[in-house]
Length: 87
Ligand code: FES
Image 1 (cartoon, rainbow, N blue to C red):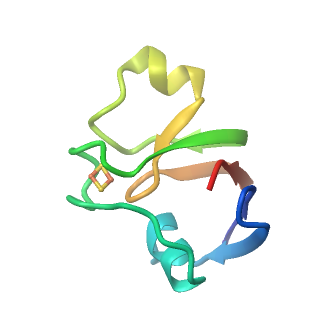
Image 2: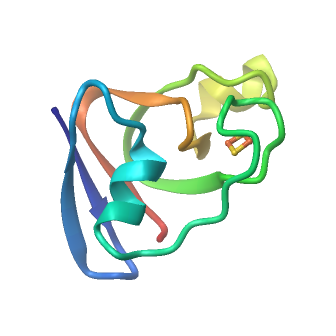
């Protein structure tokens, strides 16, 4: 599982392998905007404060993906098991 720290909400959640980060956050009672849930619209773009995203979207450019400052939480995951998000 991935551990995701929601920095502004003061919550820490676990994301199961078969669950999106966005869904896990919503299940924890924190609302996040999503639309396509397929990594193509950009609605769920979220600032990454710490950790290394494993990008699986089609929105960010290669250089944006390499910078790792934002991610699409509907499809992307994480390298290293822990992310801190600006949520
Ligand atoms: Fe469309 Fe995440 S909801 S990119």
